[in-house]
Image (tube, rainbow, N blue to C red; front, side):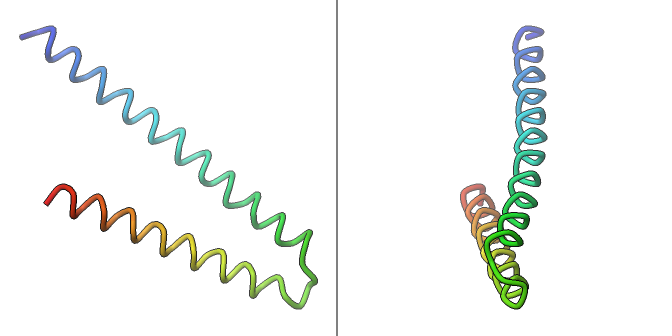
Length: 73
């Protein structure tokens, strides 16, 4: 019983650690893309491309959340 509890806590801890690392990597990627948009596109079009990129990120997040909720339900 104690081994199972220890293994469960280890798996939970690893999941939390991986989720934190994924959050950091995602934030870094998001801000790097914002910098790339600022470099590649003219000043007049930067806000349009940033809005499109942000919209795509929101859509993907909503899809992943819905997929996660539906798979649990």
